[in-house]
Amino acid sequence: MNKILLTTLSVILLFAISCKEKLPLDKDLTKKSYNLINQEGADVKFPEIIRGSITVLGFIYTHCPDICPMTTHNMYLTERELKKANINDVKFVALSFDPDRDSPEVLKKFAEIRELDFKNWTLLTGEKSTVNDLLRRFDVKAIKTDENVDEDGILEYSMMHTDRIALIDENGRLRKNYKGSTLNIEEIIKDIKTLED
View 1: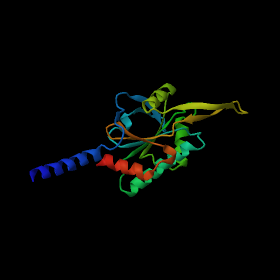
View 2: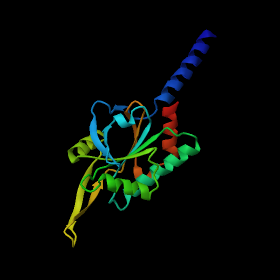
View 3: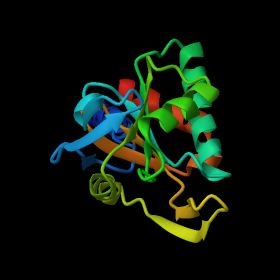
């Protein structure tokens, strides 16, 4: 009888532990700090700005015609669903991989058009070398394509890039990646709730 009870308790304990650790990644992002600029033009450090909060991080550029607006919208929908579930302590961060064009002013306008709430949202840019180094930490690629000069002499280009949203836990550890443009909102919310437990 004791063996059966012990076996049952072991299975329950093992199940409880595996539920807690079912997210596929556990990469420490806190070993290096990055000096960036937010949409207000203020200097911020990553990952210090997200420390202590579960964070949904999207990789975007504001001139993107398709994937990035969908990624941002899916993050917005995630935030909306979390609020319905009375989960209000998740941070949303969008990092631009086009710092040449995405100034703080451009990022702020991009956010305002989409009615993003700056209480929960931060949009980031920075020196190109810093942004590229941070992209490597997340294994995100972004490459200029189709460069052209318009009639005013302004360089225009699009970017081929990784379609990515990352989920980071409150300890600054990358726990899961998602395809940003086709994000399954129910899946990421379930994963956030797992981190909250």
